[in-house]
Length: 560
Image (cartoon, rainbow, N blue to C red; front, side, top):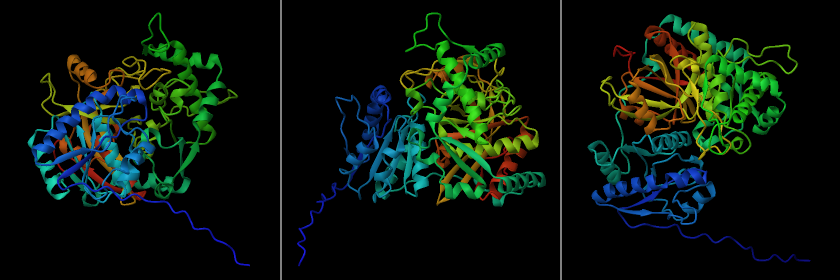
């Protein structure tokens, strides 16, 4: 008997769109959260009009691939599925510009940019208020990790020579570049013997005994660049313990009210200021109930870290938890501080991690987590302050007060930094309600002004299927109150701020080289100690199989 086979129904593929010559495709990626996209749309629209004017002035046409949505009241790509729909309209061989005036979730675009055959250009506005720079740097780091070729540009108003000449080059050739003479491979550096000894010994210890990175769910904030694949992480001696945010939320319910209140009282006794209005309303103000929930989260996080033997942990910060409890900021900054409220085991017999900060990597940025773990061990070995944190490489500007001649960066983490980094420590730190646009359930930030001093900055990133690390030196400066206030008002007032001068690295060099929205920062007692700590961490990273580069110069301008 002969089987009857029906004619297969095969999918019909549409032919790929094809644009006319000298036409540039433009798309705008946005946030996952509707409130953020709506609030930021006007700034994005204004930025695009200025950018399009510059492109047309160079003799090219612009086609925006997706339109403003009158129902949603914005014109952003706001999900991976929306991004996939948009890319069906993209000519895969034609030039494309991703214009960013806001924070964006990179996974909305990776599916379309990875196979794209035409030139790619990422562009951001130079603004502290509208975080296009941060969003673009995240996308750049994500594209670098994925092995996608791209060019990148930034500008205040898209009329300066630095921008327009490179834009014209990209339009004509499909690529533009930036000089990075400040970058030097570690292999070309003469290392002090003590730095080599410390770095090698710490790397050997991790290789032998291993370390655990506790992760409360991966993929926060669309940061593809923040996820280290196991096959790259494990050879360093570090392994992931994949934890669930639901487990953290549940553990919070097991914390006794008396335990949460004891943590709250500890903060108050230390002189920390919570900005809680007398007649606080839950939806728009910070309340004591919100803070007590954060105290429960702090205790829960420490206990779970102890349960699993974690050497560092990362909480998702916004996604998921924001719908069920207050923000994790107060928790994160507290964990990263050696002087923090004591937490006992569930049976009350042990004080957990006594005398130690617990490295926490904000937004589950695993690159920052690996860096933070290494930093603590290096600084403990050298007798330097172990507290460290990531910051957003948010923005920079000249000092309007005239106090400092150098270009001053605004490093601004989205909610918390360890009080040991702040002027007057806990007493000089305060807590504001996280913006309702992002956090419907509120929660206190851990804000302060970074104290003057010497820091090491660094970043772990991925390129060519390898783990890499850039390190450099910087100084934190004190600016007049009115200049600090101006910078806070230009960015996000509720978040901790650091005024940083990167030694031997200009604004454009930093933007050209940096492969992430985040930058890791740690203090040392003086310039000489900071130099040694940086080199010891570089040696440790190299011994762990990470490719290391030193950026910039020493404080005195001398090369490494």
